[in-house]
Picture 1: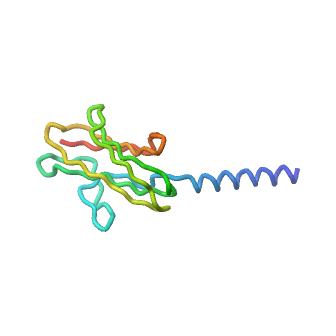
Picture 2 (picture 1 turned 90 degrees about the horizontal axis):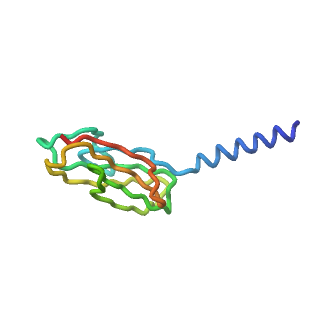
Picture 3 (picture 1 turned 180 degrees about the horizontal axis):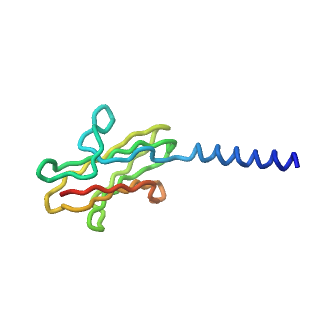
Amino acid sequence: MRHTLSFILFIITLSIGSSALAGSVKRALFTIGIEDREPVFSVDAISADFYNSISFFTELSNLEGKTITHQWMFDGKVMFEKSFEVNGARWRVWTSKTLIPSWAGTWTVNVLDDDRSVLESKSFEYQ
């Protein structure tokens, strides 16, 4: 019984340890500006009357050595992609897109890993 309990505790510890080491997207958001490598504030919609540019910011955790891609999608089409090499345990990156009024609608940015699996997906409205 004691050996069984020790084994179960070992497996739980192993499981907790490996998930703590797993990489992740800690933050992902749209913003209209970046200052000192940080978004000025989060937005989920912008108006063509005031802005024609938007940035997508991500903070990555424990993905060092990986390649991460921002994939900008509109109307079911990939409009832009930018890949980044992650060179630290905490890594902040962003991409920006200049928009034209005929591109009004829902935009989505997918954060892709090396295998092109989606780690995170966020959308905003361009009005």
